Structure formats: C-alpha cells, structure tokens
Length: 194
Picture 1: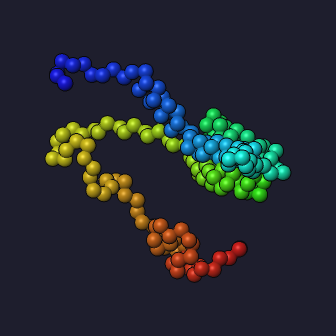
Picture 2: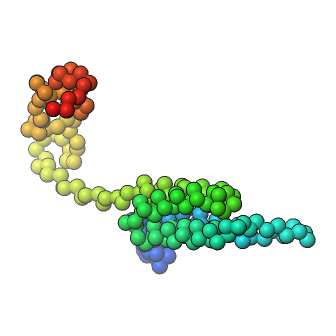
Picture 3: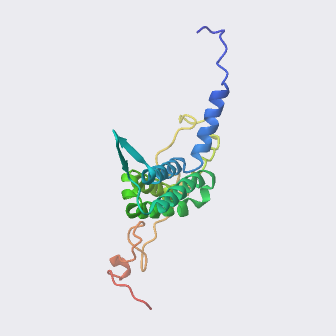
C-alpha cells in the first residue's frame, strides 16, 4: 500500500454491521436469542416422527398442545426481549417458569435442550442492565509551569478536597464501618428499638 492510496471507504456491509452492533448492545440480545431458541425444541419434539427403517417412532404426548403453547410463548418472549427491552425482568422470569413447566409437559423440556436454554436466557434477561454511556472527560487545564506533564494523574487527592475524619460518640471508628455495631458507639451487636 502506498502513501497515495486512499483509505478504504466503509461499505454498506460495514455500516450495517456497525448499526447491528449498536442495536445489539442496547438490549439483552443474547438473552432473547437463547429464550427464542428454547421454544423450538419444546415445540418440535412432541410432534416429531422419527423413521427408523419401516418403524415409525412417534414422540407425541397427551400434552402436545401444552408443548406448542409453551414453545410459542418462549419464542414471543425472546422477540419481546429484543424489541421491548423494558420488560426484561418479566420476560426473564416468565421464561424461567415456562422452562420449568416444560419438564413435565413436553418430553423433559424438549429433551433438556429447551429447558436449559430457557433457564440460561431467562437468567441473562433478569440480570441484564442497560449501560450508561461514558461521560466525556473535561480537557486538562494545565498551564505548563510545573514539571508535571499535562494530563498526568497525581498520587492522592488535592489538599483542599480532603474530608476530615469524624470520630467520637455515636460515630464508627472506621469510615467504612456501616454496621452500627462498633464498640465506639456502644452498640456491641445489640440493636434497640427505642
């Protein structure tokens, strides 16, 4: 590549890939994918017929309609996790419960495949939290009069930002002791209601 070669212009594929990456990062994408994929084995196996030579093996159960309902609900919950991310806790808990119900109803939860996918996807949906965008850092206001390079981090806080340490009656000895049971305040592990 020579110095005169222009930089590659991002094409349609690269732009779409970056748009999809941004869309995927703003929602519980993998949780929705696992929950939606969990519905397919739960729906499929009760209606599947396996042909072994001239022998037909049917895995249908008496609760085939229940398996179909559970599978369709899991697929809908997976799609709703993608497009309605504010219901992630409800959809996650519902996916976990539907996965548990699929064990007795649908051939051990789609031969455990659908059951495990719904549990993992539901747990991921419940635990997903939208990220906060990083705040831009203010520009360094160095005037260059000292030997410290601009933008360098100094050890310790600046002298005017140090908070005085408060100790005494009713105050814990350690600033991080939030238990309220330190010997300094006389509680000694016993709490009073009055």
